[in-house]
Length: 302
Image (tube, rainbow, N blue to C red):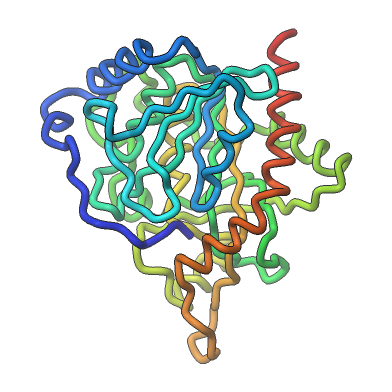
């Protein structure tokens, strides 16, 4: 579940429509290189209520989205709208404090532009986080779910982020999606979590377009299809990262339990409630990420 609180946003869309995705991403990457000496190999996307991740960085440099030519602007509450660069556990990292959802009025291509910028800056692995609704009846509010696969409803029912002319400078025309969320890193994270006493779930994330939350019938359908959690982000970013040859790690924090019975009396979910849950639950995810990034960096020094 991503936040539905948004405004129609067409910031810099006109320029993007008249240039290729590669040219736009390349120009942004060159601009960023002129603003920081950091050359990241690890990228992070902060979900709703997780914008405090960069507080763990050293030697940080912050670039507001609004100051980056031709970069979209985040419109969702809880998304600060910055690119933050720095070092974390020895790794050179970049972090998005706020993402871009198609429901905000962005095209799929524009929504995944930051992933392509990451690729051109040298990012090899991207960690994608989100707030989600729990479909699995065994999940509880505040649970951390390590994403092992996804159901891309917007891509199955309409255009995905790779629709249109393919640019081989990013990746192949028909990329495999057989293992989007990198198995060795999932194994590493599960081992770290067990050793550290951090409870995590592992499951399948279902993406809907939004901004309306899913109906009980839709939620029940997704659960029967194998979905464990549902939200409005992440999958289009993960697909694009795979297309660009990057490795992907995904996490959801379960912000609410989704109703799958239209006859059940439940209170409507508000985005403010989601943010409160995320604030309370983020500590354990930050602890887990801190340990993972340390081990990730050590493995890349070999």
